[in-house]
Length: 332
Image (cartoon, rainbow, N blue to C red; front, side, top):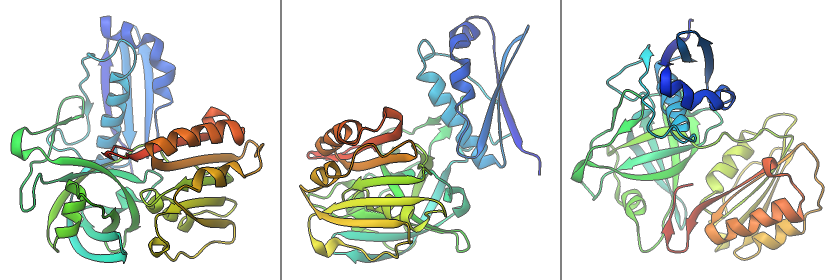
């Protein structure tokens, strides 16, 4: 099957602004799409290709966003032509609640029927949920601008946006699971997860974020908020890969049963013990190692020093994400 293609042409001042960024743009292809830059006397043609319209829409948004963040390119005029639906963001789907279950005392799993579950089956685990501002409320979906980026509604129709991990994907059933940590006081996402009923609709934009690593050895660390991606990575661990995971919980009742592949280890810890446990690992792990953490902001900052200092990992071999801070949730 022939890939779908979208392209954007630059000349004059726009080309000058991008001239020093072409190598960086060439490296942006990921997540099921490809990027190419071709220069000619007429200017620069930036092309995207993907297997379907959803991945092409995701490519448009990701590449446009990256270009806008490049030095001197924030106000660059960017309009895609070619394939794709100009009226709808293909990487925004409608999700409907199928059922809910209480996995642990403070973790509620919501199963959703989605439009295209296979779209979420890759190495990008996070999505941005679109939730109503209040229980029983309604929201409007964003529309695409010429650059492929979302144009959000205003006022009461603007959805509440929260980043979450897709815990599991069942492509044959058209379903995904998302785990919600229930806490007090309840924020918009917690309140929605607590009160939702089968048939309730929300939206999801993505997948977003960075793809998971497939290094021969992954060191994973986190608390309850990172447990969905840690357990999913363990369950989807490929032959020839190994995972050493450390999870800190407030209570032993929050532990979950998971079938561990032979090359995977899971260490259950208590709050306050995570940093010490990582510091106790031997240093000099080698080139085939990648470390990832998802924790509270202060712990995330400490783990950066542990990974880069105590374990001696180069900066490109670890990533520390602050999923939340003591005052409330933040975007991972």
